[in-house]
Picture 1 (cartoon, one colour):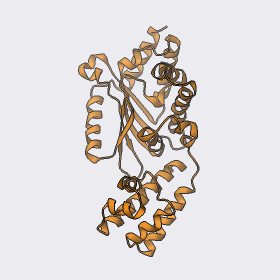
Picture 2 (cartoon, one colour):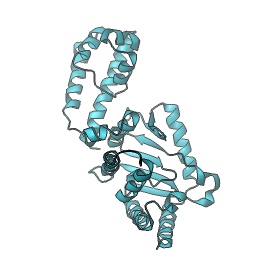
Picture 3 (cartoon, rainbow, N blue to C red):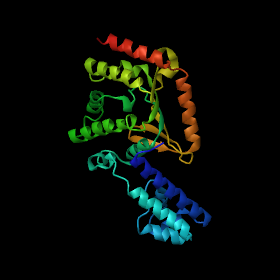
Picture 4 (cartoon, rainbow, N blue to C red):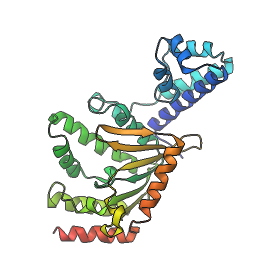
Length: 291
């Protein structure tokens, strides 16, 4: 599968981080020891090893010397970094986006861009990648009413930019669940919500998108509003990530136990969802009720 330039850059960071972690471990050193040599905290070393940043031009030679890397190992790491840095800048690297998003909420963009498959439970909201501009604007108008107009606009634009992963040359495959409550909430008014429901129907007809609704009749499952996303990447060596929405932003977790727990949770919810055809009929019924 051909991945986007941004995805390649992320994978390059991960490969470098994993290689540096391997060299450190084989050298019998802890992250604190590496941090002391670099003059930084162990958290900075951890960030590099987790593939969240390349080491700087000053840091890399010090690490390679400390770890006693062979000439071949040095050359491989340098080549990977040079290749990763050669890829184009991503839309989410624009200053106006970085001004609004930070931490895991910001890192999520690069992971979503690098993914080839996602399992999404959006709870009481329409799945973010399937939201219309007007729906997003209504969400922002309420949830960010105390923020500046510029920040709200940046939020809306970022949400719309993200949706390109579904229509790119090698589109993301998405398996999405949402509660029936997400379809019946009249976000933005009847006209906006009717347009949103029609957009869901057209989106669900795309080959790379599966959308299923958990109906009110599903009982306890129908009020499970906590949203989360499981992000899977091409290549067996790339760890899956779970994103969970919190009040102060997204949190990301790539621990294997947490990923398995999220997959079981998603499967349990999916067991109570309507199938794809029933979902489309339910959406169309709700859209007619708004007419």
